[in-house]
Structure formats: C-alpha cells, structure tokens
Length: 112
Image 1 (cartoon, rainbow, N blue to C red):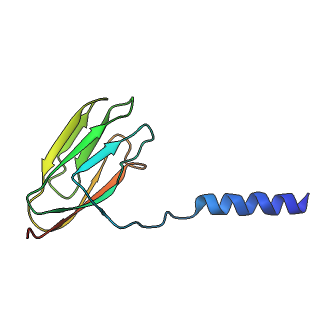
Image 2 (cartoon, helix red, strand yellow):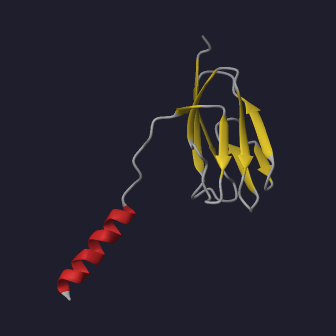
C-alpha cells in the first residue's frame, strides 16, 4: 500500500507544479476555446497593432485590459472584440468573469 501512496503523491505534486513560462507568440489574434483560457495567452505585436480576441467557447467571457484603464470588453459566444495597442511595453489582460484561470499579456514593441 505504501508504494501506491508514494505514486499518488508524486503524481499530485507534478499536477500542482507551476506552468512553464512560454515565449510570446507574434500574432494579433487570440482565441477563447472551450477551456477557460486564452490561446495564445501571451502575444507580441508592433506598436499600433489592433489585437482581436474571439470567443469560441459556449460561455460569455471578457477581455479586461488591466494595464490600460481596466476597460472591460464583454465577448458573447461567437463574437469578437478588438483593441489597438499604442506605446511599447507589457500589457496584462484577463477575463473579469474567470480571472483565476484566464490571463494573458501583450508585449508591444516599437514599430519598425
């Protein structure tokens, strides 16, 4: 019984490990698939780019621009919202309805 308990504990600890950070993806499109997450969550765009979030889930979500005045854009299933980012820097966003699970960033770089 003890070896089984050790395996269960090891599996549980692996499941609790912090997610590995990923490099931002160069795109201006973010999807909200049926899974309570943004895909990709972390993106990079040039200054002046309009980013579009599309809700492909069956539930209403939002895009709350945490670093840009806290604007909340509600996105019903099948709908999209867009925002144009100006000024280089890191911008955080989340879903105000599901902020514990749905978070992301937009890294804005100088336009070339």
